[in-house]
Image 1 (cartoon, one colour):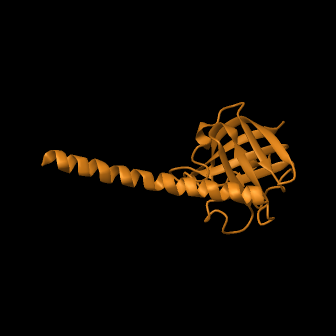
Image 2 (cartoon, rainbow, N blue to C red; image 1 turned 90 degrees about the vertical axis):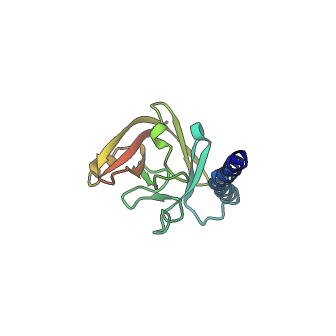
Length: 159
């Protein structure tokens, strides 16, 4: 009887472990389709080769709610001198940027041209520290931290 209960528990547990994976897989397929179709609904996309990660970039108010990357109001357009992209710290957006190292590549595109950036630094900043986001020829990825009193940024320079 105990063996049956254990087998049933393992079976049910494994089922619940695969649900988030399937949802994530479907989201990745959706993003790849959007990038391929390039229907001018979005401003562009970001790619982080180290994680095989891609996501669309938008500047609409609901971009963050839809697990998309948000081109911030204090940012240049894609391809400009100072680009700041914000995203939630979740599995669909920026939960892996904590593992980016100096020298890693980040690519952003406006669907017409790709721009290559190389990571030079990462750090925590205060929520109201906007000066850290003003670096010429840079791409800064911005996400929240677990205590919501700090922000985590990854600074990269265009190559």
